[in-house]
Image (cartoon, rainbow, N blue to C red):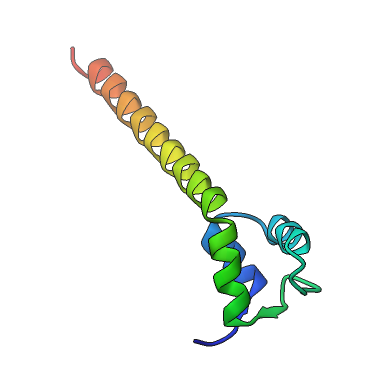
Length: 85
């Protein structure tokens, strides 16, 4: 597997590069900027250490998506009710 940029990994995790850089610093993983690349071993460590954070982010994104879909459905229903005479 090839090296992975910090910014790409952050996007995959649904967080900003700055947030991921903070986690990397806490984990003592050397990365100077979002364009830095990480070795496969570091990527595996990050995925393992941040699994709970990543899962929580995924749940937040899914909940937001569902709320958006429900709001759109409610708006469409309201329009349909207004259109009927």
